[in-house]
Image (cartoon, rainbow, N blue to C red):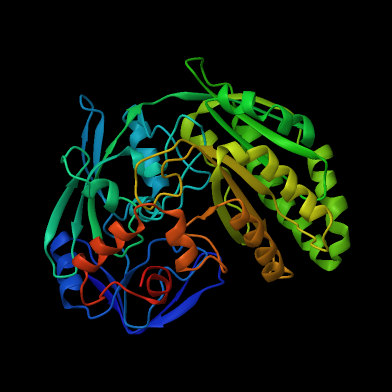
Length: 432
């Protein structure tokens, strides 16, 4: 086991950091158990792909980058068993080589599987749940070192309570996922009028397997992504992938973001040019994980909230109008996705079909003001924040009012971790 003492941790977005006395990277479950048992205070940090302080503490960090093996693939049961630290991109490639796939994915694949599950990470598609819905079973190392198995079919409510756990119940060790035969997606991407898309939103959401939107603020157009599952063969070319996904989407976009930071009033025209000049209609068929996952974005600030689907049209119009009427000058996409209601206690989709609205900005200028304005609006719409992203105004009282099983989860956490070994400022702020 590799141990670094002390260690400076900085998250992916470089907006949160801490110095811990010890940074542990176990390679076996025995090592993982020993670290958990011996620590007085500890948190888990995967890729650091959370924008808030969920990972931070001053005592110890547990990183599972070397605890990332595939332990077994059962093609008959369509299940795969993995160690908790495996990254989604690693798992996607291994599954693909075995003719398998995850049924749904988010836009980014750099997260560890355990981290994505524990924070309620999601993809898009109104008939698909959050990523954790693909879990059949996981083992959890409790703060005292006891290993328990949590199974979807156990007959009690533990699975639904513990799946989205914010790293507050212990350390997830091994995970068994339900998978599907590999499949292709037909990706139809195009630009349309904002109001026309919102007016037709019910039809688009209902009749697209995986539907999402990208809105570039200050522009009356919106980018529409319709992903349909298909048995048709792939037709995407390596040249298009390189030219669009690497040269333009990564290189040219980053350059335009820098230009927009020279004079923030230019951002309106830059966004307009991106939507009307550079994003052309796309009609391709490609492997599912390659369509779900977009090129890794540049560093940016991010919040994302889940809202009842019934409020989607009014929500999108009000957000657009709020931005247009304000002094905000936003230089990054705003991502809009959809997910099916579920039964997981701390899932933002608990008991509600959901529209997710992601608010991003590529620099810190005006971010606090934008976050404040958006959160005030979000709470009027009874929104629930993504656990791995920034939120500032939503305190424990508000969060408790939005989650019917909040007290049940709090009791479970207190029973699992009576000494507060896995409690940091983040957990204390929202749960204690």
